[in-house]
Length: 285
Image (cartoon, rainbow, N blue to C red; front, side):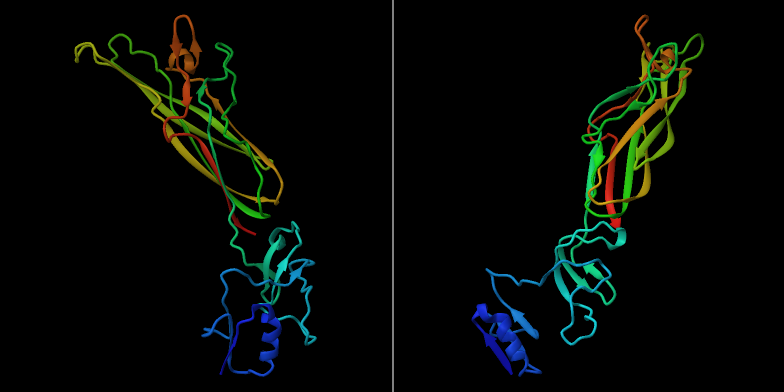
């Protein structure tokens, strides 16, 4: 037996009426061939769930008219907003699992922060005066999560070396390592890690018609991953700095001087798709 209800304004009231008489049939609302126990068809109207201010994620709040606990699958539109970690509530459709209210919305919260300023690094020494802990700036330096819970923080940085000293005497090749320490501060915690790179100076004058080959900014890249517990709606500023060590073997020991012109400074610069970036993703409550 099939009942077809074409007056949509009477939909739910008539559904209850028919339900008391039809124990094994299907009900179609605007649908002549219902494909389930209830088949609602409309291209202009939606179904309105009960609008409820849930007390919290673990309290039933709504009632079962039969006087017992509500059943799993009971669905409402919640208007309450709470920040309670795994039990946070926010406006939207929730269903009762049998023990707590669970959102029907897939939770996605992703933000990508890109380096937006070139940095030429220099070691923090008294001779040439380049200050250490140089800041790497992004298009934004703070993150505000939508949800309360666990977030994955992915940080990728790069670093290239400056000019090494030219070979002298019978030496035709000079290669040296330049290094420093990145410090990433987020949510009250500072994460430190080092990164090194190499530069070279190849003087082929004795073998190749007097040519000189200089290799600089041969960058090295590294990624770090962290997990943070964040609170919805809270602003979390972050900073990324780099402190280059004094670099013997490089011009001006890894710094810059004007007379004579020397430039051993390193590179944390933007080149096409190469730049530092931070990606933050919501994981779970």
